[in-house]
Length: 155
Image: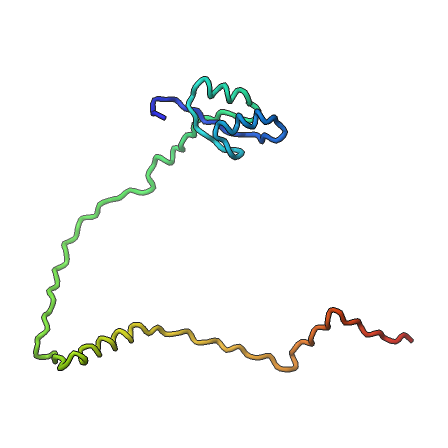
């Protein structure tokens, strides 16, 4: 709908139970599917006539007004004076004298594999041991559901 077209908000306020199928169809034709649902439709004579046909089920509600406090920003951003940037750190080049070159390819791969395996290891949680109940504390087994209770002698 274009901006210069006026619209109305229609709300379904009463259930269609107990009313004719024709009246329920009018409510559905406006796009209302649930009770207390609000739809926006163009403000034309046809739309107002449909609403007037079932005034006991529908009502026209005003446009919601935003509260005054909603226009006030929650916070204000104040720009801080920029500090001087920290001096750039130059990387230190390693001398070739202190690092021994690997003699073979296998020797170069082994430290890399060892480093990867130590990173992959994750400490596991220790299992919690549950103390067993003493034998005297065990419950008696339940009687079978079909078992008959023992008769006691009357004196």
